[in-house]
Amino acid sequence: MKQQDLVEIEPEPPSPGEACLDENFLKNETNGFVIPDSFFRYAEKHYSPDPVSDFRQRHFPGVSLKSWNDWRWQLKNRICRARDLEKYIMLSPAERAATTLENLLPLSITPYYMSLVHETDSEDPVRKCVIPNVRELIKGPGEDDDPLHEDQDSPVPGIVHRYPDRVLFLSTGFCSTYCRYCTRSRIVGQRGVYGIEKWNQGIEYVQSNPQVRDVLISGGDPLTMNDDQLEYLLKGLRQIRHVEIIRIGSKVPAVLPQRITRKLCAMLKKYHPLYMSLHFTHPCELTDESMQACSKLARAGIPLGSQTVLLKGVNDNPETMKKLNHKLLQARVRPYYLYQCDPVPGSGHFRTTMEKGLEIIQGLRGHTSGYAVPQYVIDLPGGGGKIPVLPGYYQGRNEQGQVFKNFENKIFAYPEPLAGNHLN
Ligand code: SF4
Image (tube, rainbow, N blue to C red; front, side, top):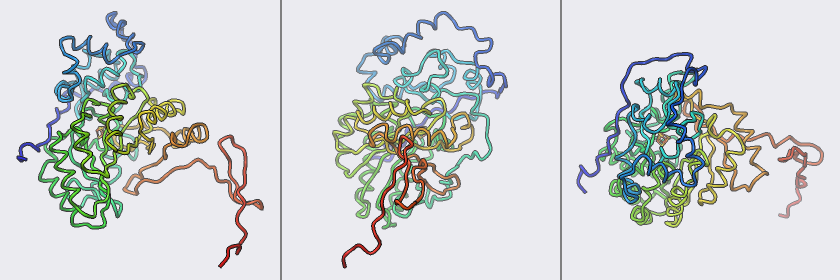
C-alpha cells in the first residue's frame, strides 16, 4: 500500500467567528424567538414511522437510496458549517449564539444522524449531543483539556499506556460526527495529527513491550478510516505474538451505520479475537439501520459492548437507560460501562451528580436482566484510572452473617462458613 493511501481524512475546521455570550441565552432560550410557520410541518418528523427516509426525501430529494446508503456519500455530505444547521433545524438562541463562536469543538454531523435530530425541540436528547451550544464556553472548576492525563501516560505519540497489560492506540483524530462532550476534545478534529508514521511508532512500541496483551484502537473514530488503513493497523498488531486481543472503540454504528459493510466485516473477521466497544447514548440511536450494522458485526463474530456516557437531559433517568439497554441487547450489544461524564471544559451542562448515576443503577439492578445493567464507572481525573461505583447494597456484618439490602430495600443475610470446616 502506498503511503498516501494511508493519510487520514482531513476534517473541516470549526467555524470561525466572534465570541458573543449573552447571559439571557442561558436563562431563557426561547426568549423573544418567533417560530417560523415553515417549521411546524417538520415537528411531525418524530411521529413518522420512518424519520430517516422522510428526512432524506425532504432534504436530499435528488439523492438515490444507494448514494444515501454509501458511507462515503455520508462522509462527503457531513454538516460541518454552523451556518448550514438552519437548513435542517430551527436553532434556539443558545444554539444560534454558538454558531458565531470560535474555539468550540469542531462541528460535524452525518446527514443520517442529522435525520435523528429533532428540528424544533432544542431539548431533544440526540440534538443536545451534537448541536453546539453557547454553554460550551463556560469552564467549570476542575475542568481540564486532558482530565484523564492521557498525555502524561503517553510514551510515544498516539499511545497511552496506563494499565500494565494494555494500551490505548490513538489512530485518528477524525470522527464523522462530533459529540459535544468528547473526552478527547483536545485532539479530535485536528489536522494531520495521526498517520502512518505515528501508527508505525505505536506498533513498534507494542512490539517492544511484551506485557501488552490487549490493544484498544480508538481516536477519534477508527471506523471512519478506509478498509486498507484499518487493516494496516490490525495486521501490524496481529503479527505481534504477545497481543492476545484487539479492541476497537467506535461510535460509527450509531452515527454512520452505512460504514458497516460486508467487505469491512469480512476484513475484520481475519483479525480475531477482535472486540468492539460501541458508543451509544440514547435509545433513539437504535434505528433499523443501526441495529442492522450491529447485527452484521455480531455475525462476523465480534463481541460487542456499549460504553454509554451519562449525560444530563439526555439519558439521566432509569427509564431511558433501561430502554437503551434493552434495545442494545436486542442488537446483540451488551451494555458494558456507564461512564460518569469526564470534566472537559464546557461539560458542566452535561455532567450529572454521582448520586444520579447510582440512582440509575439502583433503578436497573433487580428491575431488569443483569445483562442490561452496565458497570457504572468514574475515570478518575488526574490519571487514576477507572473505578466502579456501586450503590450501598452491603450493610455490614451481624450475628447472622454478612448483611445486604436488596433492590426492594429489604434486608437479607448471607451465613458465613464455620471457621475450620474444611477437610485437609
Ligand atoms: S465519537 Fe468518540 S472520539 Fe468522536 S467526538 Fe464522539 S466521543 Fe469523541
